Image (cartoon, rainbow over all chains, first blue to last red; front, side, top):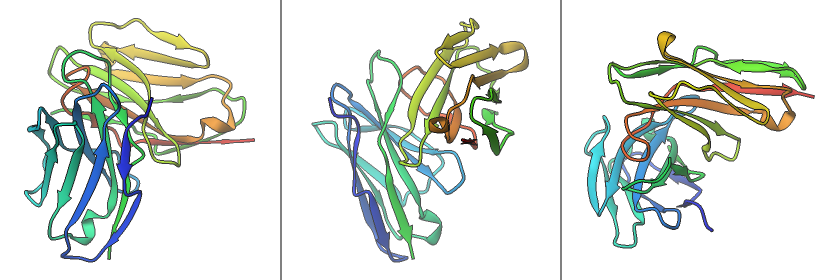
Length: 113
Length: 115
């Protein structure tokens, strides 16, 4: 049973560029959350998608946007990259109704130069 | 304010020692959930335990045990007879749902277990 899959694992982008990160949830899960983890910090909640809609959003600017597809997979898009966007981006999946806890992927390490 | 504080940034112990990781949380809600996650160097967050605010019963699972005290807003985690494989970053987190909504994480505690 595959867990949460994220791609790519590593990415280097230039300041001002745009990036798309992808996440496939664990089988049976329909809710996807995205987190940003700066080096040496705890993960910070970006937003959560359920039924292809953004259900909750953390304190992140509009440069951060997302999408959820009918198969429950999700994308995180970041526009106009800043050096401060360099971080590990983690995807977590869960069930929207009932269930127990969250399953995290191994993340995408984004470096902005 | 909703906040999780892990005051210990780094802990270093020798194998077979017991170690306790501290977690203090802040919330005015009466219903909430507390989690502990382990993050090995590979990056993924591995779920260890969840507790809801109505269940103060402490738990032991193998070498792991948890002490939840609402009176002091603490949810501490103890590893008994630590092993080198326990070396990782450990995060305490707070949520207002068991499986939806956001997790509020602490800063993490890096545990190094030396042979």
